[in-house]
Length: 204
Image (tube, rainbow, N blue to C red):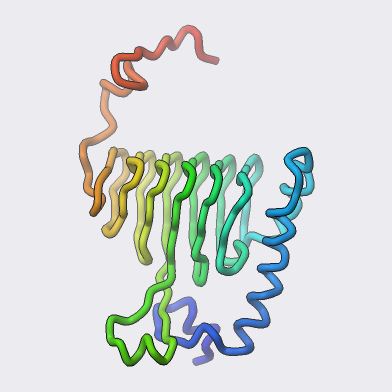
């Protein structure tokens, strides 16, 4: 099994092998181009993202600066995904994000980990585990999602949370470590923030 194959099946491998680094650097050059676009160059940004990502749907927007170990090469976005400043995707293996999901500023989604055994870390070994984030989620500012996590659909992850276990669909989850606080419920159909009621008649 090659190191490139091991990257995507949670095996230990050496990420600094020349074959891997040479390919990775090319993708990082494209990421550099994206981060150096002007705000007025929306069409250029969109075209670059389609080249950078494994998959990306229509209507996606990522606010630079954007950081990714492989420049998005192992990232799969659905349609209408939004990411605020400083999204970091440690995409040494695949990251899947469903339609209409939003990322607040300074979110980290990591697929790469290192063994606890000091001797293996000293030799530079790494393993990767895919992350899956469902449809129509809101990942709050400063959230960290560790390798191997699955988050269901319609989930809100509160700001500053560290997600170390899978999160089911249709819940609000917060904390370090992140835990389910409650389900999304009828109260949320009436109020959008504290005592602020939703005026459905004023919405499109």
